[in-house]
Length: 397
Image 1 (cartoon, rainbow, N blue to C red):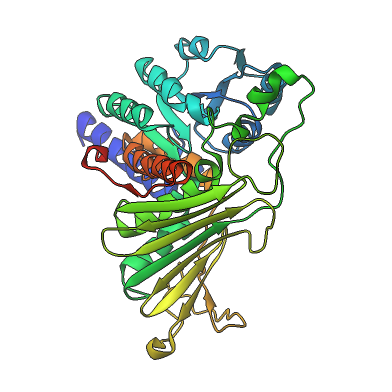
Image 2: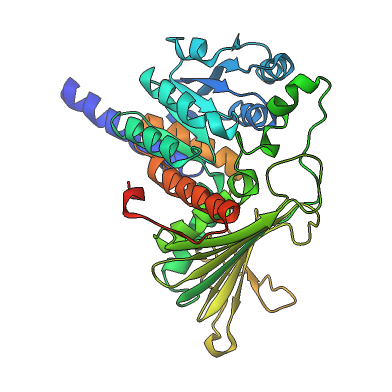
């Protein structure tokens, strides 16, 4: 074999092996990633620091820099890297670091768009935590910036990367539960979301989720994951949105609602509801997808299917493992959907790595993230202004 042919075939083989092993979230010793992605984390609060711990477990990514404006959070982020990373207070200094290939943005919601646009200008690939951007102006500005670059952009809706959720979406689209008519989504908690503040001057910096200037409240922080899922299943953006909410339990000076109720209608006629409580945690997180032949109920880590009596069928063709026939029935005659899957946040970070290596946009990308962000803004407008919000032509990207 000629040397150039050997090199070409070897390169193709390496790519194939890496792609195959990446599907399962691991890279074998025989398929080590040649280039380590040097990553900077901007925002080292609970979410950013938690993601650093996951990044430390992923081959091919090295957290080389961290940034936060609060000293105690910056120190915590550094500690997660075993104090090996560089530290920055100003994110623009981190972006000027030529060693860094990509950034992860885990800062308050209202800062996402500007930091991400500056990162693109600096030539960095971007993993931007949900919700992608605040306000229609910010959403479209970021979308225009990224779409005119050749960089990888991933939105941090981690369930969009989950192997379990991907399998469920495929089941629904294949007609497993018939024609979908309804989604009922909830994410209930019992807690006020407020952090202790030793210095009153830091109240809005630490408790930014309480204030509308910085936050989208429960819609952006929780509902956005489920809004993203419904659009993923239907392949549609909402046609119209209605909603209500209030500050009815935690009367502590906050501006964002402590309970919300949203009703979406999609062009296909499907309806979806989204509910969040912060004073009662019954059933916590749940998505119920109802179709003409059955219902799928989804949690964060598991899912069950229940068939209609008129559509009884064998429970031997829905497992994620080929040939699996386990009969894990619930008391309500449902069957657990068995799919081997990683923690969704870890899987999302692996997807980001693979997208950079393969130069392919991830499944949770700029456009899925932007569409969800627009729906979030419409939801906030509907609740705050007591209006029915309609999807407009200019929202389409």
